Image 1 (cartoon, rainbow, N blue to C red):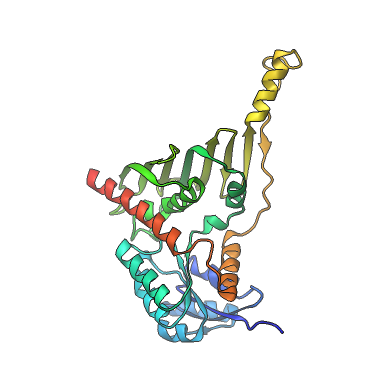
Image 2: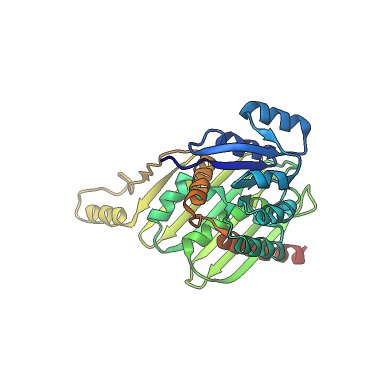
Length: 325
């Protein structure tokens, strides 16, 4: 006997939320029940495209749905999430979880009280690049990340740390798996009231160091990570879903060949392996995981705990930057 479809909704169908609606409308075992959107024109467009209903209040949408994506500005996350959790809705809340830790605690407490799942939209955790990193990263000793984007007014209700860098904070926390010893941060504002460029150096208790850079003042988009560990060097591109790998074993083998005369200095360099990554749309993978978590009543990969930890680090970095300014 087929399981009933998961009834899903989306609150906020702007530049990102429209894709949540698009994917829910195509997922097997899922029904896009409706949306809540303040723009009449955008609401009409999305409802016509996906044959769904526009609800007049978030509470009405909550009553009609099993699960809802909250895709509104960060400073509105708690305001939207709390009444939905009171209705018993499972939520995917776009990153960051909330604008501050107090609101994050309120949301997670409400989720526990109402037995609801909360998944935080750290979409890079569902990028095939991250799947490769999780399998092949052992004990990283040094990590660098760079996340660049052109300036746009959307998202500037928070600084670049909560807007962009928080993606890499979540990635690094998941890969290193160690308490943080020290954080040093710098940043400047250029066009917005908050920081538009930021750099953070994070030292972990296991002696790994991560250097994170983020900018929303770039002429190009870039999302890259480099991981250095005792047996390999990995360089991966989240945006283009590709990368390369240098193995310590290959370096040793090349040195042996050079020593015994089977290779000459200046000949073939140490082999660089292109990483075979099966490409996929991270948001579609993320929403599939979310709906499956709801259907099977299991904790999502990126739950409230990781979302809160990433938020806590991001706020620490933001406060350091503001004190220096």
